[in-house]
Image (cartoon, rainbow, N blue to C red; front, side, top):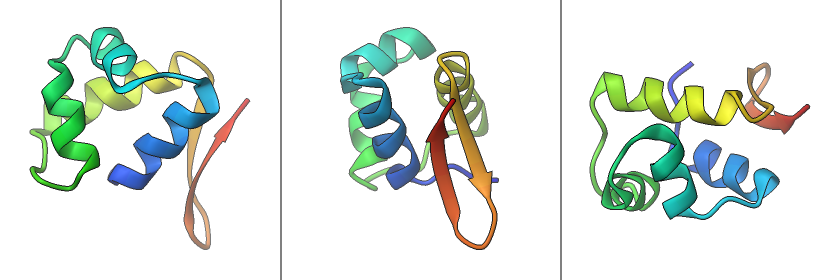
Length: 73
């Protein structure tokens, strides 16, 4: 599943994380998160992995059923 900005925004909301919190957790610049969430620039594949891993380590599960979704376990 390819992460979309809406997935990351929803996941951060479930966790109560700011963009800066996620950037720190993923080892990225805050601007990377901002431009991705605003759909201004698609990240490199490694960046997707780092964002997804940081969120999944905190209990987020990304789903790709009938419609892609996010849930907090």
